[in-house]
Amino acid sequence: MRRNIIEKIWDAHAICNDEVAGDVEILTIDFMLLHEVTSSQAFSLLKERGIPLFDRTRMAATVDHSIPTSRNRLIIVDDAARLQVASLRAHCEEFGVTLFDFDSGYQGIVHVIGPELGLTQPGMTIVCGDSHTSTHGAFGALAFGVGTSEVGHVMATGALLQAAPKTMKVSFEGAFKPGVTPKDAILTLIAQIGIAGANGHIIEYSGSAVKSMSMEERMTICNMSIECGARAGLIAPDEVTFAFLKGRPYAPSDSRWDEAVALWRSLASDEGASYDRELTIDVSELSPMVTWGINPEQAISVYGTVPVVDSLPETHKAVARQALSYTGLAEGDAIRGVKVEWAFIGSCTNGRIEDLRSAAEVLRGRRVHPDVTMYVVPGSEQVMAQAEREGLRAIFEEAGAEFRMPGCSMCLGMNDDKVPSGRRCISTSNRNFIGRQGAGSITHLASPLTVAASAVAGCIVPWE
Picture 1 (cartoon, rainbow, N blue to C red):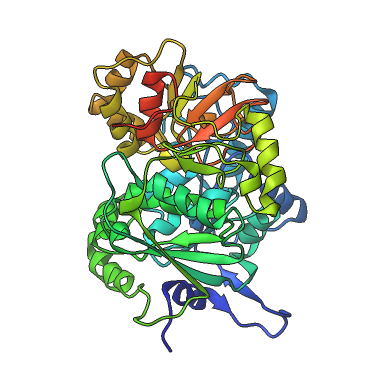
Picture 2: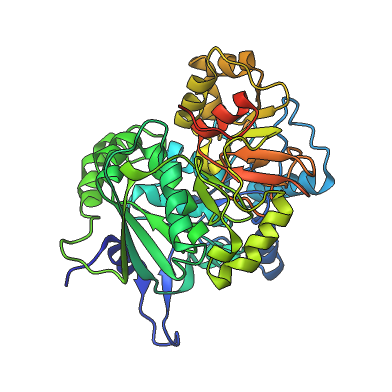
């Protein structure tokens, strides 16, 4: 039977059990990433019930969500954040779980450090208490976010009860025009199918545009799969994948490398494999994208205008009116030229070295607009060190941007880095929900190129 890659990985990890009712199966989990927000409660649950860890070598932890990214980050002022970090440290020490803490050289956002350490590998099932775990699918892994109780289940059993997903194939074909990036491609997909367009599905991304992407670009695509409702997104591993992983600290050693690659090469959809849904997007026709509203579906070309509410489907009108009220925009407004006061480069979507390089090229020899506060936050200590070696930090600081320590930072209002109420931020992150970057803040999602160009102009503009 011809199978797609999603079915191959699922079938290799699903355990048939007559005691499990309905369509639910036991899915074995190869690896779990932990962070300070959703993991400590799960550790506590195991302690209360006297349950040992199933396998501590199949998990690793870091701190990222609620930590400060200022230079004196060791001083955590917020009581809740300080408690979360202290709890994770104590539990990891007690249970013997590897923790990539401050100044380990490897601390960072879970979805950045997993790949750069080689913990993320093709064919794996990977979970984390974070919705953007789909990022790891860029390596041909089946990766998805879980809740705190499910984190506990994996800690105790190495498995989860899961319903088999539907499958969807999205083909990105063609070549990007200058100034257009994979971030624009995934925003286009979400705008086309909506925030619930892939509900119940796992997406396989394929096509000529995907094959030409770097691993960083593929991670951006897979990262935002959840924003169109997908359970996960993945890309079949290829030579680009293997080159990225070779030599990473936790990747297969030299003696096992050839064997691992031979196995990974088998993780491809069979010719003629079927999917529940298929869609093709020609990226050569795309423009830089930017969100105008309060969810990632509300995205348009940077050259476009805010939609007229009556032109939208009936099911979208109420949310559109709410978005216009919240953002202060009006129907028919050009999105280009909308004033911004903040700019953010970072997050698990666009906080990797290639993202920082592209932003630095825009800022080289230029200055951030005097009315704009710009944060550049590397996704990990490894990214930070490389950015410093390559002179990127100097470019950012000479341009007037603030180069900060690694963490989730302004992606979400869970730490010290918040956009003030009523202020408008153009951001490389993944969600533009109401108050996402701080109570009353307004967020416009875009690519690193568009964010950097807008920071210089003081308003939303493309990089041209």
